[in-house]
Image (cartoon, rainbow, N blue to C red; front, side, top):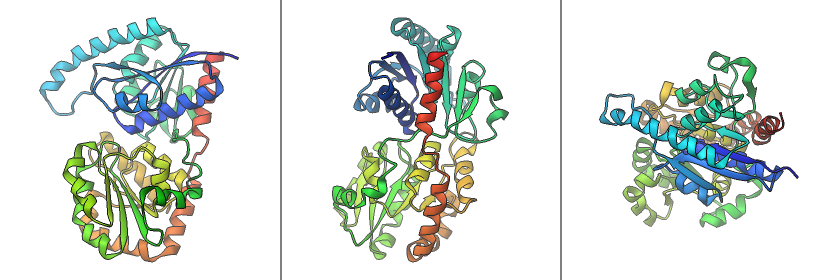
Length: 364
């Protein structure tokens, strides 16, 4: 049986980390004797989440360029040089057969070095509007796996393969886990459960808004499963005393969280959108306005325009949330329609299709 040496790089947020882990798990299934190494940014969440998934990781001293003029930007050239030198060392020592990038700061220097050394390389672009790192790398890597149509505007067309975004194992069958999932969280079976996701790092605006609406949820006899993010946990943990509220810094068992939910309120990062299509529950997207090129609004609108989710901008929350949400709670027909329509958009074989492309590179 063949064995390979595979480097994966991506991080900063769960949207870059979990696709990389999903790809690694699929490659490990196919080639159990292979060796895997992850490369991330030193102080970001991948340094914790990747070892939890059972993989080794090396950290680079790297961060993004701030869009405003700040002192951090003065340090960026030194970080970049440091990361390129460390990437050279990592690649020399590990001697990979293939390098895979899933976006985030650390994937830039590593993929750059790999491409310069003619090591087969692939990037997985999750968004409809690629970040600057992947746009630069697109000219250098062998293959680009994407989740949206129309990306030949940014990448060489002959390198593109539409695969969808990898999703975490266990999300394909959440409908079979509902009873066990509600028991897992100690939720009541006769009540609505709302899952609130502000992205892997949390969202200040969503957290503030949910706090304002706790009485509204209580009046509608709703139980709340609220992932507020590690940065905000100390601020909101006191609400765990309330009967109808569970506040979590982070939900590691997302299959149970999705399964327990009757309705989901979520940001619209690319990986979240892909997972929610597979999960097939009614969703209200509140896209973050603080991301490059406003890509979360584009992601959410693409789903909402197909009648597969509801969407409110942050500016619309005060005026429209209660009416929108009350209608959703009261209409089982609307919930069923949203569930049915969002499932149609799921690309359930994304992880396998990306692994197929990696395998082709390994064998070419």
